[in-house]
Image (cartoon, rainbow, N blue to C red; front, side):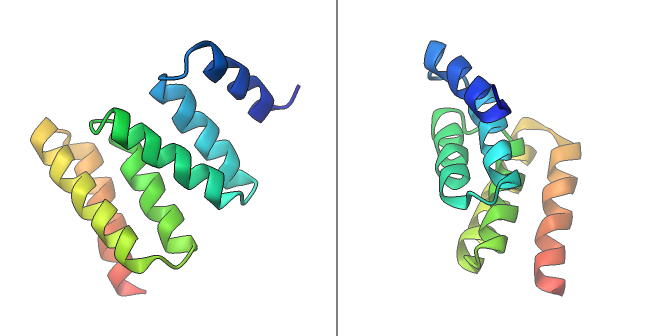
Length: 104
């Protein structure tokens, strides 16, 4: 059984598990299945806006599919949420991604 099928099985048992959704989205990113990955990252953030790691990965995905406005909005939202939560590490990672976006 491949990793995606395994994660789908976990998700079937617990459909609201943000960790599994995030992990599944990352697997889809590896396979260049952006539509599935984007949908899952968005579901994670809708269910749990404090799931900070998904902002970074969704922003990178939006950059890759050339949704510049979407990437900027996600990075900004993620930085704001990281500040609210006092997560300086996540804030710095998002800020670096945001600044690199404008440097390219």
